[in-house]
Image 1 (cartoon, rainbow, N blue to C red):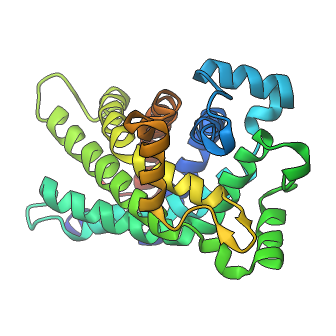
Image 2 (image 1 turned 180 degrees about the vertical axis):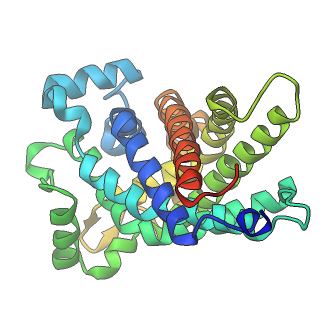
Length: 305
C-alpha cells in the first residue's frame, strides 16, 4: 500500500496531458480568438471602425471570407497549443507537485503566482514562433488583397518568415509575449488552483466537473482583465510591417502609449467580450480535459485518487 501511495504521474505525461487539453479546447474557441485579434487590429491604419462589435466582426469575416473563414489560422493555433500550452501546463503541474508540503498540502497562493509566472515565461518563449504565425494568419483577412501575406498553413508561415525576414523575426514581440504569458499564467493557473481549493473546502462542491467549471470561470474572468493590455501590445508588434526599414512600434510600451493617445485608455481592453468568451470557455475546457486526463492516467498507472 505504501508503495502504491508513492506512485506519481510521470513528468513527461504531465506535458502530454497539458498539450492535448489545450489543443482540444482550441478546436472549440478558435473563431473567438480570430474575432479578438481582428478587433484588436481594427484601430491600425485608420480602420478604427472596421468592426463595431464582436457580432459585426463575425458578420464581416463570414461575408468576406466564407463560413470557414472563422477558422483561419487553426493550424497555427494548434501548433501554439502543442508548444506553449504543453510546456506551461507541464511545467506548472510538475512544479506544483514538487513544492507540495510534507503533508501533501498544496503551496500557498503567493507561491502559486510565482510558479504560474515561471511556467508562463518558459512556455511563451518556446511558443512565440507559433504565436507570431497565428497573429499574422488571423489578421491577414483584414488587409487589402495586395498586402495580404497569404500563408497556406503554419509551416508555410514559419518557413517564409525565416526566408523573407530572418530567423530572429520568429521571436519578434517575444518580450511582450513573455510579459503577457507571465500575467496570464499567474492569473489563470494560480487563480484556478486557489479557487478549486476554496470551493473544495466548502460543503457544496466535490472534486468533479461542476467544481472544475466554477473554478475555471473565476480564473477566466481574472485572466481576461489582467491580460488584455499586454495582449494588445503583443498582437500589434507581431503583425506590424517594416516600412522603409523602420518598424511601426519601438516596443510594447510604445504600443500602449500610442493606443492610449490615439484611441483612448479603454482601447487597452478592446475586444474584451470576445477575449473573455474565448478565455472563459478555453479555460473551462482546458482544465476539464486536463482533470479528466488526470483521472484516466492515474487509473492507467494504478495511482490512488
